[in-house]
Length: 130
Image: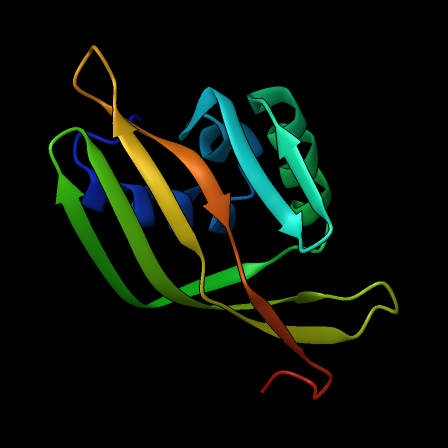
């Protein structure tokens, strides 16, 4: 389901990740969108983003949206949010991540909204999730 407003992107992202549906999440991005998976890398294009999402979903994450804010100017919006993600680390232990991504979204010709830039900031906690 496409986002009809920039505010819907947060909920659709949450629903897609928690359902383990990489395609639904990838569909929230423009074809040429960029994602910064870590401070040293930038990937571009929905196929590369989908590949990253498939890897991410392998950790069986559960996400909780703690806070969200959208600032819109015409057909451009910046989305701020605060997420808590729990999932399995490479060692099989449950890990918790606090993520505060900044997203830029653009209204499409059909009136839907898609992510153009996704730049998450992650702090991983080594403590087991409670």
